[in-house]
Structure formats: structure tokens, C-alpha cells
Image 1 (cartoon, helix red, strand yellow):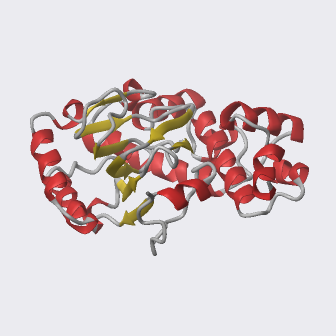
Image 2 (cartoon, rainbow, N blue to C red; image 1 turned 60 degrees about the horizontal axis):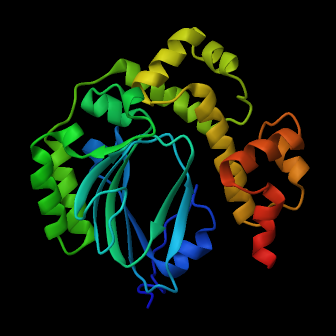
Length: 282
């Protein structure tokens, strides 16, 4: 059995590999945070499923440079944890994969790149490629948070719980985080930025200072973020059917040549751009 197959709301699938599989077998949702939190939180998100053995699947994501906080429930343990559980997911530098089976639900907070470090004061570099109990970030308040989120029957109610908890913990203004946000916006939106040196010069920083800022707030270096955003663009464009000229696509996204693009895409996704695109016609 597959529930919610005909869900009416399916938010943009940026970074999700083979999104048609997840869209057919689960329900995804997205809710904006309270405006007071928008400086640090990008959005709340949810995914829910009800599957039999024949419809279980592996969800794979080209991860964003963001920390996620999740409250997870269901019939099958995930990430080595008995459910229900609250977790903090640091930035994942590899492809993020999780097997989806049985019945389950996840409600999550996607922090802006650097936002979790600014909000909590944590050195996010220590969280990279790690999934930790929620108490590591929120201490004793995590139990109440998990119980309250699980007790809400709707995503709107779950979002209200997070708005309340996070809204009572708003940090002071942080000029260094504001600088990181401006740099991240450039990396995400300006394909002309192809080197860390160019980023540092544009923002009047030394490369060493830029590296330190990104390790502390984002958890990964600016070069990684730069490459990851271009790979997101590549995956999204291929999924949208705009892949007829992969050589032109690779150059347009800032790679030196198609061979370089193909190596990096294959190393992360697990198959070449051409093979990934060809699945649509098989």
C-alpha cells in the first residue's frame, strides 16, 4: 500500500535524486517559519509514508550546506535509533541515503547555511557528517519538543510548536553570520563565481578568514559549497529535461570541461550525468 500518492502539495525537489520515485511513494510538505525566525530558518519540511515490502525504496539526496533538526517516528528504526527520536543532522558531505520502509513520518527544520551555528552558538564544523541526538543541541528541552511535535496531528500544528520553541531562543544579532549569508547568496545565485579567491576578493576577505567563517558557521569550506550548488543546478536541470547538451550544461555551470563535470557528478550521484538523464526514457 502507498498512501498519499495523489498529494496535492509537493514542494520543489531541489537536491532529491530521482524525485519521481519519492513523489509516487510518499507525501512531502513545506511550511514557512514565523517571520521572526526567517533570519536563521529556511523552512520546515515533512515527509510521510505507508509502504509494503514491494514499495520500499532508498531516498537519496545531494545534500545542502544546511543543518537539519528532525523529529522522526515510524515502525522501522532509522540511523540506528529506536523511534520516536529527535535528531540533529550536520551537513552531509557525501550523498545522503536512507531506506524508506514500513510506516513513518519526519518533521524537520532546515536551517539556513550558517543559521544553526548563529542560532545555537555551536561550532558547526564539529557536527559535519554526523547525526546526533536532539539533546546535543537543545539539552533537556528536547524531550518536551519531541513530545509536543509528536502530539500534533497536522504539519501546521508541528510548525507552531517549533515556532514557539525557537522563538523563545532568538539569538542576538551576529554581524559575522550576516556576512556569511551574503556570501552564501552570491555562491548560490552567481554562476560567474567559480573560485574561492574570487569570492574572497568580492567580499573583502582573505581566503583564510573566509575558510574560518565557513567552518564555524556552515560546517564545510566555501569551495565545497560552491561546487555543491553547481551540482544541485545540474541535477535540477537534468530532472527538468534540460540535458540535451551536457557539454554546454557543464560549461554553463562553471566546469572547465565536460570530463571534469562528469567525474564530479558521478562521484557524488553514483552514475554519470548521461546515465542519470537516460532513466527518464527507460
